[in-house]
Length: 332
Image (tube, rainbow, N blue to C red; front, side, top):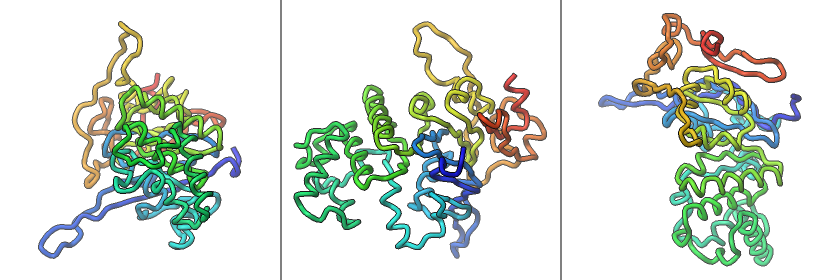
């Protein structure tokens, strides 16, 4: 892989939220929402980002786009560190970096028609100022996501959840972005609608050469859309490899537990379930050593004192990164 194949490279990204308390409101601690995370996204590919609720994946997605300011690290988009750009420079770059939000019921302004919602990006960036041209662009976007042009004059409450998410996708496409962060875009939808939205997103990716960071908590959902998958736990990436390898040979105990919880589609099929005990520790006070040690059935003394680093358990051609002291033993 060459540098031209990489559209986004993240190096040691951190996002800490201060916690204040006492009569004077002094800082008493900080929430380690994203803690020294590194990865890259290939051009025209999808990186799936998966983990339980509260692991920091949505905060990571928002920090990548500077919707939330990073506490440290680098976010290098096509050779430029986004974290160091001025407000004006970042504003110009936002045409290339877009987001699809999780909740289609909350992400659309109920007082605006669909035409106004899809025209807003053009207004903000001074594009397609001619009214006729703008109307044509809105109709084109609606057709692109499988909606009738007549939808332009209706309001969000007149649509189903799946239709609203299609509108959210159309809004993200309006400025012809190169990279889209999709923050759990199907988690609020019925299962029957989820596959339709996933297929739409894959078709658009292939048609326009888009790159996705697809955030989800459900490994069954993320499997088919992702080229690579990074597994997060308590603010850190614990495993990262291509999607096929992850499902065929998960190395981290946390990933193994997540995959074992995927429902078996075949009637009567049975597989061993790995049930995790306890809750995710607080990101305000993460445990020493491996952050998964409080729930890991294989934890040893070293796990409780020494933090594991991501190391390659695959090959140079097909890397398989895992942060576990005993991954080689456990995978056997």
